[in-house]
Image 1 (cartoon, rainbow, N blue to C red):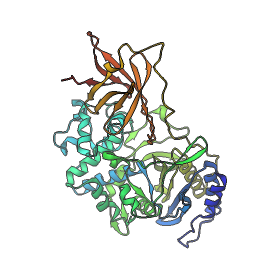
Image 2 (cartoon, rainbow, N blue to C red; image 1 turned 45 degrees about the horizontal axis):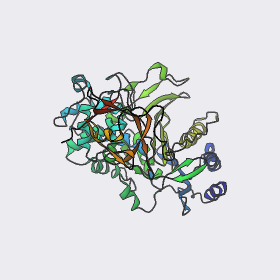
Image 3 (cartoon, helix red, strand yellow; image 1 turned 90 degrees about the vertical axis):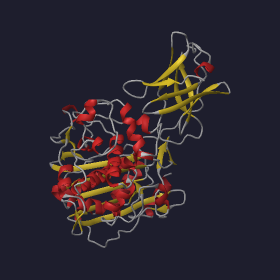
Image 4 (cartoon, rainbow, N blue to C red; image 1 turned 180 degrees about the horizontal axis):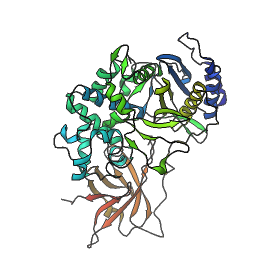
Amino acid sequence: MKSIYILAFALTAQFCFGQQLPKELKGLDTKIEDLIRQHNAVGLAVAVVKDDKVLYSKGFGYRNLEEKLPVNENTIFHIASMTKAFTGSLLGILEGENKLSLKDRPADHIPNFQFYNDQMNRLITIEDLLSHKSGLGSHGSSIVLFPENDKLKTVKRLKYLKPQAEIKNSWAYSNVGYTLTGTITEQVTGNSWENNVKQKLFIPLDMKATVTSVEAMKKTHNFSFGYARYKGTTERTIFENYHSSAPAGAIKSTVSDLSNWIRVWLNNGTFNGKQVIPQKYIRAASRLQNVKHAEEYEEGSFLWGEGFAWRLRAWEGHFRMRHGGNTNGFSTLMELFPLDNMGIVVLTNQKNSLLPYSVSDYISRKLLGKPEVEFPVIVNDRFKPSAEGKPLNEEKLPTHTLQAFTGNYHANGYGKVEVVLEEGKLYAYLPTYKFKLAHLNYNTFYFKPIKGFQEDFNPGFPVKFIDDTYGEITKFEFHAAKEPIIFLREKKQ
């Protein structure tokens, strides 16, 4: 593999702006190439903006390892959760147009909308969703294992989903919270989130290559495939399908386009003389809206919390705004230093990687005159299911025949699971996935991916079947959250 990466570095794209590179960044190409080698990465793109000018914009390595196609500054990468700042800005724009207030409750704009309880209905505002203090939490097992393409149908599930943290007094990262904010933009405008973000942000900011779907990305012919490490090798991954949670992570972009995104944030919402994002929103998003608890502070930090879709911190005596992204085959990072009028974006086609953080840390220190430090090299292996599961636990056999567990089960806020017996083994059919029910002990199993499963998540939470006083299986507990999720068995006709 080393020879592959050495060849990739030889194809490093040329610096395209013809500007004089500041002396602080002399040797940056060599440093980045070294970091890529250390991480065994395939490709990377980086841009640096200072004083409203692009100082550096460049690609390294490959966007397609198999065909040896190089990365340049216009190569499209999935930016994942960096999407959230775009969704937040849409809300800020709509507030500037007097179509809503960030202090509104979701039910003010979504007909018949309800949270799990009255306290949430009364207290949670759009601001709380944007700063992750609503208490909603992730509810990943709902939106990942039971995906729904309709955003409105997805957020209507929240009526049945318990909060995972204290309402208005916690930090609980929430993709479904941003799905909800994106749904609000659709209800207010009568237009899709995808069209809203294009019309109100991509077009005004001249982000011509930026898209929200894999289909649109593939039409450009300059996009990156995603890769991940597994037991010392590099493997191509599938693209993540965000379904209804697109407002939380579906944007795909380039460092060239994202340089304009940096510029608008450093210029109080203006771009090429036009106010694209209201200054009021820029200021609100850039100040602490949700302070992290003391035990969560990083060492040496006296400022640590959340704005709107930005992590805020005092770093080495400088005010820093940051948000990264991680999805199948990609790791990304954007860092802004508003008081220094500087921003950095790093996109790489390597999953579970600290490479973007390492590159941005090096550049930040060079431009701000800070001593270089040794940044950890961490790339976690992708998830892959093990070989076909073990047989029944002979010492703790099920108390019922396997046929007794079959049937249709349903949980509000999630969906339907059909348990079937095929060739002497139990399988669970979900709306998009099929899993084997691998045996743990007695009446407890777990979802085990079968051959052909390519997603980069492990669904293997315990599934405990429960019987009634007559010995009939009536439900199962799915242990994927703080409290078990109860799936009730439908009565056979």
